[in-house]
Image 1 (cartoon, helix red, strand yellow):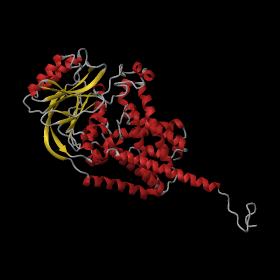
Image 2 (image 1 turned 90 degrees about the vertical axis):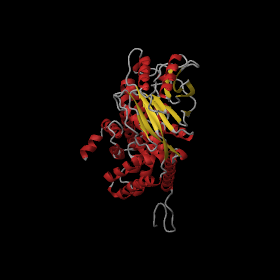
Image 3 (image 1 turned 135 degrees about the vertical axis):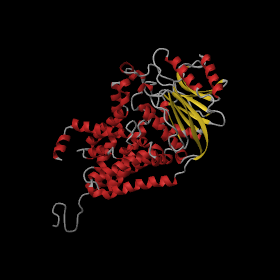
Image 4 (image 1 turned 180 degrees about the vertical axis):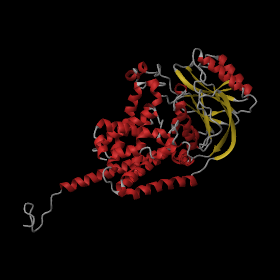
Amino acid sequence: MKTLVHWLASPWRRSALAAVAGALPVLAFPAPSLWWFAYVALVPWLLLARTAPTGRRAAVDGWWGGFGFMLAMHHWLLPNLHVFTFVIAALLGALWAPWGWLVRRLLGGAPTRGRVLAALAVLPSGWLAAELVRSWQGLGGPWGVLGASQWQVAAALRLASVGGVWLLSFLVVALNVAVAVLVAVRRARVPAVAGLVAVAAVTSAAWVFAPRPDTGGRARIALVQPGIVAGADSADRRFDREEQLTRELAGQDVGLIVWGESSVGFDLGDRPDLARRLAALSRETGAEILVNVDARRSDRPGIYKSSVLVGPDGPTGDRYDKMRLVPFGEYVPARSLLGWATSVGKAAGEDRRRGSEQVVMDAGNGLRIGPMVCFESAFPDMSRHLAEDGADVLLAQSSTSTFQHSWAPGQHASLAALRAAETGRPMVHATLTGVSAVYGPGGEPVGPRLGTDASAARTYEVPLAHGTTLYVRLGDWSLYGALVILAAWGIAEAFNVRRNARGRLVPPARTAHGSPARPGH
């Protein structure tokens, strides 16, 4: 133990260890998908921060841990953003500095049972506060939210229908806090065990009492994944491949065909020949086709990414322009200040334009679809609003071909399971190059996935559902609850500090038999 304490006395060694500890939770996400590891992955980081010699050092441990977490979660960006990936990780990692300070404040030294009980609520709330801030689209959005690691766990998906992915994050952090206390604070094991029991009770109650989707009816939806098409004239050759695959769906009684993000590289107003070919495909297959146009528009200035529904007579007029753009990938924030990122990586040379509102489309036969584009499937509020607006099926058109051989495609596809469970609506995740997947109203997989090595068209029997989940009705109540917990704890701490300060300032009382100078005389 003395050797470890001496080794950690070096600030750089301690910082390096914090970064490694912060990176551990990433193993719970795809591709490793060790979902169970999330329940203990934060323990080394918690144990390190609680032993910090000062509150300031604990905040530094939080920062370095956050840096490790963000860098590991987004490591697949390195070939594109290069050194800027480290800059982003360092900036976002700072959001965990207050969390590190909180860990030492509540668990440092020999914490009382009261402090441990407070830690079981305050530390998960502090984690949620960091996730809330970084979920702003300008800071990269909610990619890698800790609760998203539970996308394969049926009980967790049921909880997501109650409080969204945020509730999952809260409970996962609470479990880690309880385990850390069991490991390091013997005298406070009773409240730690109570915390574990409380998490188990909440999970069991949600499993029993949370409303299940009222399923009824099915929709036959086909995904067209062309695979990697690169080199000169790739946009035309990709369209040719998608057209060939779509023709294979003729006679399969498909109700809707979905192409991936950037599946059409030309504005259909500028290329009426492509619009005619799409209309012919719709007539041949008997289904409307949802394509994604990534091009400079002919009717207004700028480049847009747009979901466009095409029927047997051509574009139907239903169109959704992507609202939340990928920082650096589709626009450069504060380009006048950060434009140099284009010279060291593959950041966007020109900012794409944003849409103004979400759209629910009528795909025929009473089927209402809510499209999102790529990165937008990471935002729980977008799918929730589409469900509120009457969408029967959620759709995400994506392309992770730039990161084809990384963990990114699997991570992205897993988000659709959470969005489906949160809203009680099936979700289709259609990509150019994989991973494409479909999930039912409870987040359960529907049919086989199309991996990153596939070039195919596949039809899925998608179960439909009605009614709304508690998350759709109540929204982000778990986030607001976490902020209330933090505020209440802060007020209580301020009151205690003030009371202790008053106690130190009050002089000793005089008595009839004494004086301040000579007590008792």
